[in-house]
Image (cartoon, rainbow, N blue to C red; front, side, top):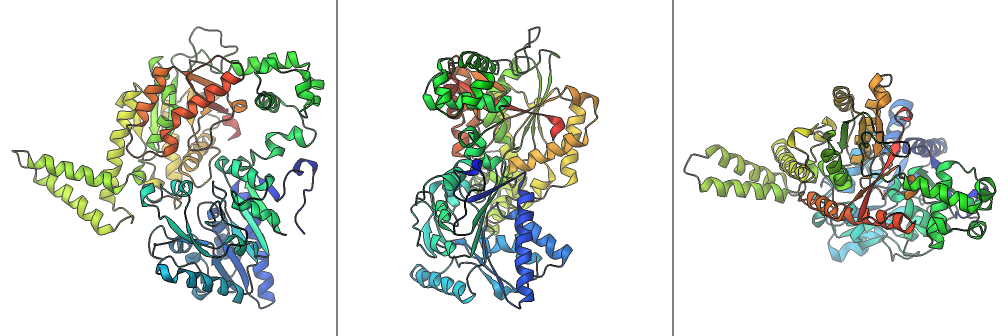
Length: 630
């Protein structure tokens, strides 16, 4: 039997979905289930067969399995594993191969026998791929089938590498990767052009053959596709939706990934709700968007016909409710993000005093703050505030080899034109080129190369800040140790990272802090850097200056903030939008999302316009986080 909803609120959900406070809590639950299975099979003298996933999503799950092995003596001697996929063309030794990922993240830390581990081979000749995939299917059958299949989900709705268009009965095969999937992997491969175009993956039919399926999803970037998977029709355009047909499928998600589910986003459509202020504002904005009317044109009938009659009973009539919500949204708009001095700030998002304010802007990698809030940075500087932009990491991992080689060639050309002796510079440039060639394409950079890449990006960051009128003395590169010692999906935060952030806070004693990453996937750079800030602020609780400090959250690579959640909307003129665009493009290596940041700001302005607000060229949006809640 398929799973059925257990409450009215879940009535639109076709797959059992459990929302957890965070990924660690969800992963502990799944790991406990897997441990029970393993121990039960041990007593029966049988194998437990697990289907495993790669990528950032299952990393906390694997960490919990390792803990159970090391601290609670969970043995994996009777476990047989089958991984979902592998990039085609990568050897098992390649740093981004899933063979290596699984060794790093799990297998090298537990007692599973090597012969019990199965991962698709990415190096078989093209004419042998079909036979190799058939053998993989046969190995699963010989093991008795998969007991628990663990999955993540991609932004395209893929499970494994089953991209849109994959059929329900597809089996293990080679597949062409979707452009969005390749964009998402660009950071790991130092550029989208380096991401393999093909992969070997279990098919949808292979996955559905597992006796139990558990899919995990973290972060707001997964919210939209998750809702389509759980509540939408079964369709090959969202391959994960085929899981609706599985008799025992469960989704474990965090709060950020749940935001587009009906019971979270529009709960009045599936039952009674408590009409607290933020939900009320969101409901009115949703109704205006649904009816394609500005807020002040909404009428009682529209509310009643869209599941919101109780709201009218409590807070109506529509005329009064409309005016109140209209004013709330209008009051979020401010061209003075640091507060307007000597002004009535009753209805402004930020206080007038003190002036000027001490402002700290935390950017996980140098491009993050510029892409998200360059216009606001410019306003804060021009309005006289004491702004300090903190680049938490060097960002060197996002700089491709080609940029380092280009610099070295330019240095060699320059040296050849000089009359003075540039022996040292020539030796340096040639040494970098030799190290790049010796390390192999896409292998780990040696320290000298990584330092050069950091300096190249530092120069770009200084240029970008200068466009925003932020002088070099107002920029600091924190170079958190976790970044320089690790790489994407392999980072480990330490007390030293938190200490460096705390020291900056104690030194500046800011009135405003801008940051990002509170809703991101926990493995992302944005989330990791926010955790250093969150922990540092938590450690400082009780400091007198902290009572006067406000924390404003901007969005990095997460989806844009929803209008209902915006606490401060900073409008931009056409000139400021152009300034921001110019600032972003000082960075040589930017993603499509970063390149289109100004268009996202224009869309937020268009949403405000459709609600009946004044028309602006673009708007940068911020949520307010309560520091005491961290």
